[in-house]
Length: 290
Image: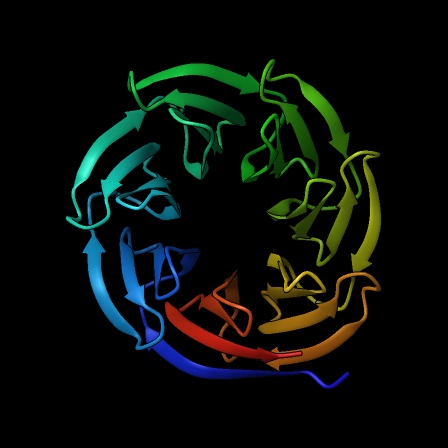
């Protein structure tokens, strides 16, 4: 099979690391950065639509809540709810004792966050209250994904992943295998997830049995982000200054794209394109043919 990776557009998007990219719709994405801002872009044209200011430290993640609102998690220890169109902060949530690294919408009115204080916290958007502190990890929490209506998966600096029951908030299963901190998680399907590790490995997990079923091992430095692409491939980015394309099932490395600066996050845009954010604030659109 012939495959290719080509950068078709690069924009100086931020004045610092791009930490996260969230697809809003077929034309727009949100980016977050160490420069304390969130920005809305038309990724087709590279045009900046809006800048969202208010956080006092690194904005680690942004997630679309609905057509009019999005959520952010920041190292300033807060979560914020924003109006997408007007750029206004609607609400600020405080409670974490250290930097908030991840946030995820659940069934309304709930959202969940993860922090360097080693906790997950459940919040109610209707009452504006923190409803539960969830403990289990012994280091910071770097990733949360929703597996299905009753389970979420978290990844941590304690080198483990945990599968949680969202009814009881008890740990269902602990996943071990990484030899350094877990940098990011990605949903594959209800039985599988990907983890990107600071040990340089990407792992495909069987969530039912708690086993690693594939390891993607060619990166020479920490893998910052890895995602499934079109059900058959994996796209990853690393501090080794490369993006790599893999076969999901076999783990075969198909293609490598070198960058001048380390790419830190990758997000799928459509069936031919991904967005990549790097350590100097450049936002790249990469066309994938496979």
